[in-house]
Length: 275
Image (cartoon, rainbow, N blue to C red; front, side):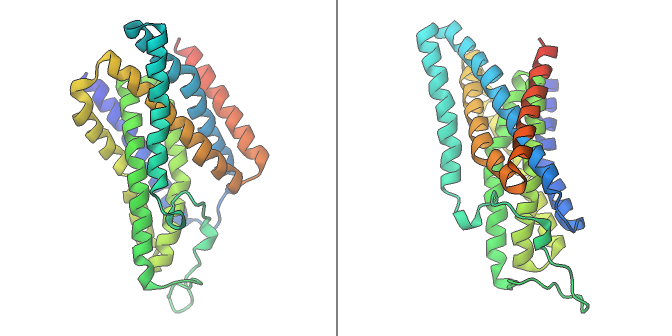
């Protein structure tokens, strides 16, 4: 049990720290590889959607029907699935649209230093610091349930948790860029933009710890059935509401679709290997 908890936590930590990859890209790079990000985001959406519909939700239905019968167990799994969707929708609903970290940005928006060493940005204003801080805070709040999702999946089945962690990690990379850009505009400092963006991803392992200490006493087969159905709902919503639109915005339509199909194919073959 202790080993499974450690593995689940390390997977969640990996997913959260990937925000720092996006932060580093924004710190060091001068151009955004939009084609790569588009395919990667589509890939992540494919992994999440496929594992949700083909593995997590059927596993939840199977577990709950064993306990409650076919009709009642399927009902509970379905309600939990849409409950997960409602949960993540509520979180997004309370995010101010103009400060939403899922509004895609590019590294090119972060203008270089002038010859005098001063950051030259078209909108630089120190009073915008609050906007940058709020943007980082919003991402931190949004990452919290994703950390719980990765961790709880890791407790139940590491073979499922690994692709989930990779998919969430890919999804966090452009978020790191998207937080760095407004923070840079707020402060004029790439360094501060990097650290605020990086730290916002650490709420994923925090979500894992809170999820474990709050839910550990109730992690029965019934609870895992309900949780897995809810996780499936959360990931389906993230795929359709965040990842695919972001993939379209960063690149061409076909880039997103090719990534989506590749993600589903990789997930399908990985599930076959673990059967």
